Image (cartoon, rainbow, N blue to C red; front, side, top):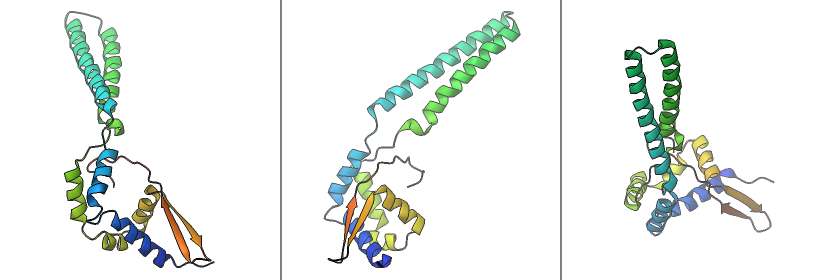
Length: 168
């Protein structure tokens, strides 16, 4: 069975664009704001990492004092190496992908959407690979019903966290 992709894709893009039209924009931004709420445990994890870093820094100062006081340099070097590894691990947990999303307010989301402008035109001219990724993230599932000449589109979006400056 042959189904013209261009007719289906154009209709899907128009449907996606309705989510961002004036009638639905407030509800869409509200839903996006809710979905982007920062993990409440993220700040506690970050604070624990900052405490580990501060503890490591204090231990390194003590090890330097011990070295200045005549401690065995080989022993102190072993201690320093262990603490530096611990400090690096804590630093990675602060700057890694587990930082969580940057939460946007409803007004910021609205401004971003309005900057995009004509969503249908944007989607029509989008890179096919990026459009495919968008469709995947929207969880699009199409079912063609030839007897009705109908394509049923279902969307079950996946949640992906992207920080500012990252991919979208």
